[in-house]
Image 1: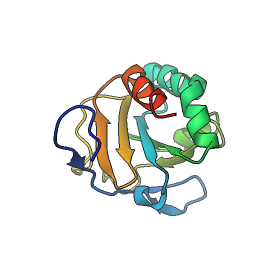
Image 2: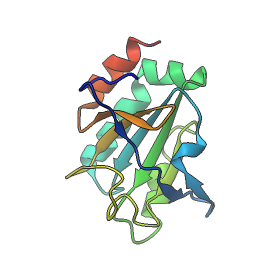
Image 3: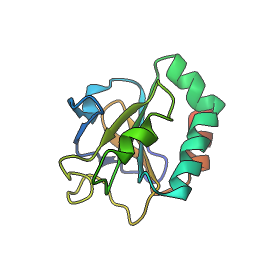
Length: 145
């Protein structure tokens, strides 16, 4: 088992979300080597910069193109369709959704205090990284290209 931060990996709680077409999806439905879960708010300037970092990463692009990484962006705190307008600016290769079931914000899926937040999961749903910078995740993934 691969863990970047400790000898023990935390098992991710699978979560449901809704996409812009109204489909209910689950994170475990994406069977790539890695899943990068990007949690954001559509009105957050830091979140926009974080999304741009992910989008501009040559490592992320390479792994997506080779079917080894899925980026799942999840909008929180959304009361209207602002998240859909924001998600429309993200690369088409990303899976975009909203925490329509409040599993992330009110549940015990991930531990975070602010957005943006990043979580890197392996194929089995084990958490490799949480609460670290995107740069740290990108460096880790770059070693696995």
